[in-house]
Image 1 (cartoon, rainbow, N blue to C red):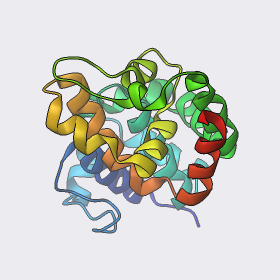
Image 2: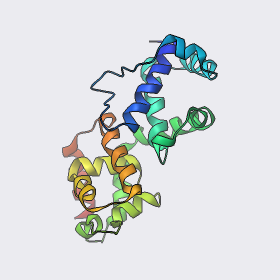
Image 3: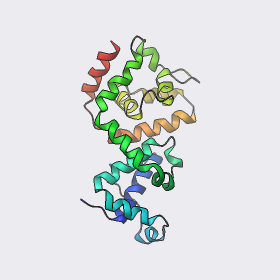
Length: 197
């Protein structure tokens, strides 16, 4: 179903709120935002939303914004100009990752092959665990981190131990992105076991 430019704008605001505000949940509130048609018509980037609405369906618009906020190192500093500039590339890469999620997860978990997996995820005060370092250096993608967190729930321990703005930003992103990663946890748990055991 085609989306109107104003609906695309509301989706943008809803996804932005989802990834930047702790209490707002896009799924729970069905993407509702306080956007008004008057505020939309005052925007200088309105034409871009009009173009986006002609190119993508309702579901694709949501995925497009999710892909871009997830790709950002800090969603709270993301602005529409970045999305206009690199949004299509981010969306294409995000689609590729999601189409081969189990393969990518299995490949990325091979980083831990031959290692003591518990020591790789163990966190101590003031030090990033090896798992987090692998994410930060790009050898593990955000989707694999979300899946691992669904399996192991490591983020609650990291939240308790790490007082670090890098982790705080990533922690919020992991929790918010989880709503958009629909997987069979048991399937991925088995994949993980097969790689690390």
